[in-house]
Amino acid sequence: MASQYIDDATWRYFWHPVCTLSELRAAAADGGHPLAVTLLGESLAVAEIGGTVSAFPDRCLHRSTRLSVGRVEEGGLRCAYHGWLYGADGACREIPSMPDRPIPDDCRLRSLGAEVAYDLVWVRLEAGADTVIPGCPAWDDGAFRCVQGEPYTWPTSAGRRLENFVDLSHFPFVHDGSLGDRRHTTVPIASIDQLEGELRFQFAPSPDMNLPDVALMAPTDYRIWLPFSVNLEFFFPDGERSQLWMTASPVESGICRSFWFTCRTADRDGDDQPHLDFQDLVLSEDLPVIRAQEPPEIPAPADEYSVLVDKVSTTYRRRLRELSEAAREGPDALSRSLAAVRLESDRPGKGSAAV
Ligand code: FES
Ligand SMILES: [Fe+2]
Image (cartoon, rainbow, N blue to C red):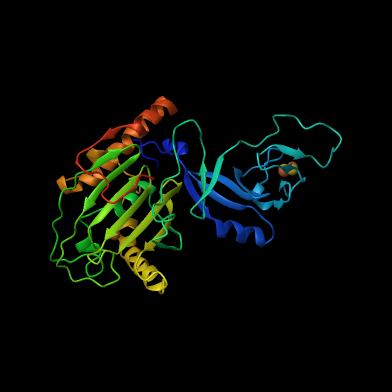
C-alpha cells in the first residue's frame, strides 16, 4: 500500500532510469520490439526511433493493445494489431486501413520525457517542475574507470533502498568482515548540507578495522540527489579515489530496480570482476534485512523509533516529506522546495565539483 506520509505521485515529476541502453538495444535486436518497462506503476514502451529514444504509455490509442508487442521501424513504432504507426514524438503518422484520410491532430500518444545519460534511459512522467537528471560525477571524469553493475530488483520502495545505501550504523551488523567490524559500532553524527535538490555529508570510518583490500571503506563524501540517487566518493590514503553510484528506480509500490556503477582511479586497466563481485557480496548481505522490513514504504515518523545516529535517515525522510507536500501544491511549489539551501557544515562537498 502506498504510504500516506510520502505521496509516490510526487516522483512523477522526477527523472528515473527505466532500463540500460543495452537492454533497449537487445530488445530491438530480438524481433525489433520496444522494451516494456514499469515506472511508478505505469506501463511504458521504450523505443529507439531514428536515433531518438522515446517512451510512451504502453497502450495503443486505437484498441488498447500494448505497444511493446509492436515493432520499431525506421519512421516510428508500429502497433501489432492494426498497424497504426506512431512517430518519435508520439503523433500518429499512419493509419494503414484509411491511407487517404487526414489523421486528426489529437491522435497522439501522451508525451513523456525520455533522455539517455550514463548509458541509461531516463524517463520523467510529468513535466513542469525544475527537475534534472542526477549527476554521476565519475562518468565524465577521465581519471576514473566506470563499470556498470547488473541492475537488480528488490522488494522494497526506492526510498527504503536509498536509505539503506546511506545508513551508517548497519555496517558492523549486516557487513561484519566486508564493510564493517562488530567491534566498532558507534558512528559520528554527520553535518548534513542541503543544496538545491541534494543532501551532502561526510563519513570517516574507524581506521583500525580489518577489512579486505577491495572493500570500499575510507573517508567518504556522500551526495544524495533527491529523491533516489546517490554517489559515494572514497578518498584512500595513497591518493586514489573510488566512487560508487546508485539510483533506485521506483517501479511500483514496494518494488524498485537499482542501477549502479563502480568507478575507480586505481588500476584502471585491471580486472573489473573483483570490484563487481565485492558489490554483489555487499548486496547479498543487505537484501535479507531489506526484504524483512515491513512495510516496504517509508512510514510516518511515529511508526518507527529513530535515534540521534539516524540523522541521515531522518533528514532524508524530512526532505522527501517536504517535496511530497510541495508537489501536492503543484510543480512550482515543488521547484521552490527543491531550490532550498540549508547548510550545517562550513565546507559542503569536499572534493566534489558541482554537477
Ligand atoms: S489496437 Fe493498435 S492499431 Fe488497432
Ligand atoms: Fe548495506
